[in-house]
Length: 259
Image (cartoon, rainbow, N blue to C red):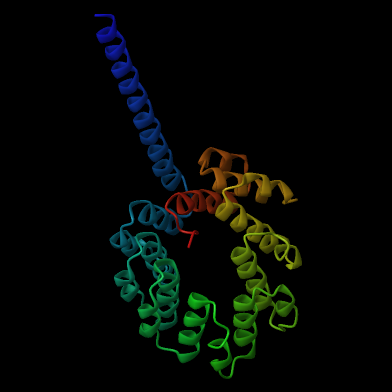
């Protein structure tokens, strides 16, 4: 009889734990849904909801054309569905969507759907980690230099890139590849440097990396996104930054950033 009582108590305890975890999960989902609806910018709020539900049809409610294309690309990424890429109206955006999914799904066949030969070479190079493909990039020395730097995991190779945007992208991609922040420290712009460190923190699931970010609101966003806690975004007073924080919390929860 005593054994039966102990067993019954254990079953009840297990059931209570299960219900608690289910309630916690439901609460987290509710908080994330509320995060999307509390975004002030309408288009960003719609994109947040589309990513949360992994529903490309929601993107049709995005007013701005370029933002709508970006919404499709984001949903394709979290759904790991290359079929969604064809909904994008801009050919360059479609190609970038295929690059995203080729890397995320480890599917080299997606590289062959890309229209531009340089981007095909980039896709193969980054997917396979083979700089030989980078050397086939024509008439775009910045892209070739960044490609070679990333495949060689050579931060110093980014230093010689003249185009500032591409140089920043090079440092950021290398930081992501190495899962470390030294490359981020080479980025000049404060906001870009903070975002670079945030991406590394997301990939490593380590919010202590956020403490190395100087500007308080960028630091708060980093902590919120890494911990997937939209409540931390409320510490941010700038409305656009708060919206960005909420969107990124949902995107991170839906595995947007991990490859």
